[in-house]
Amino acid sequence: FSNKRIRPKDYDLVHSHDRIFRMDLFTMHGIPHKTWIKEVRCKTLSLFDRSMAWVEEKGITGSQIPMILPVSSLVKDELLKLYNIPESKIRVIYPGVSKDRFSALDKETCREQVRRKHGLSQNHIVVLFVGMNFAIKRLELVLKGVADLVSRESKDSNLKLLVVGKGNKERYLTMARELGIANRVVFTGVSREIEKYYLACDIFAMPSQFDTFGIAVLEAMMAGLPVIISGRVGAKDLIDSGAQGFVLPDDPSPDDVAEKLAVLMEKGRRLKMGKNAHEVALQYTWDRIADQVQELYHLLARQKDNY
Image (cartoon, rainbow, N blue to C red):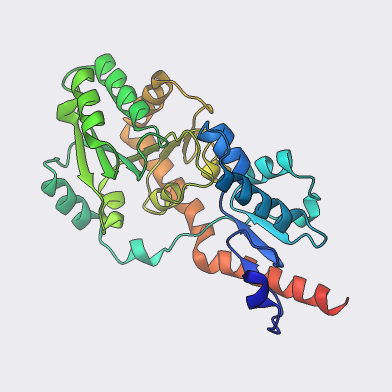
């Protein structure tokens, strides 16, 4: 279908964000389909999966290899493991974040409104978790990390966890009760004002099982939050562990999470890392990312003209 739509037209370049046959650039948001099904979801390939993998392979390893733009080095590495593609045909371009979405809001107002809405005080140190798949984002690990830290400090700890997003809420509420931290965890559901939640919190945690980039990480950094993520989150490329937050091992333990949360309980370090995170995020606004892509368009268009 894509061939029929593209062939009659006189396009300078075709830039696709999905698997098609005819393209000059391919922004690769996910890892190879075969790898995703077998290694992340731990399933066997269905007929549909095999078809998707075939289209993907033909699109990026055919006679005319497109310029492939993985959204992180994690995606690039998985791509090179599976396909024999020259590195000269691969350029990592990260997703961006809108500065205006955050600068248009007053941080103190957001902090007061969100915390009042969910019964949190200004003195609480609030860890934010954002995700639409609690299992893959490893909410269980964050809950256990919070429980570990509370048991180490004291029952008077002012640590709270705010969970924004969609998942099996009842399962994780039960888990929080069993861990003795149900009074420390607030589930908000999905929010259309997610920027206010970033600005209202103190720490961001998302130690995902796998995330090709993790746009929520960059959003948290733009809001000035230090972040705690796993080594299987593509946004780790932007983080110098210990400077803007922490990158945990690929398969972290609750103790790993608790240890880094403990460091960030100290206000001075938390604010310093949050400031560092914000400064890094400013380098990845959508305007800057668009400039990178446009530069690549001009380069490839000139190369085509020379053929």
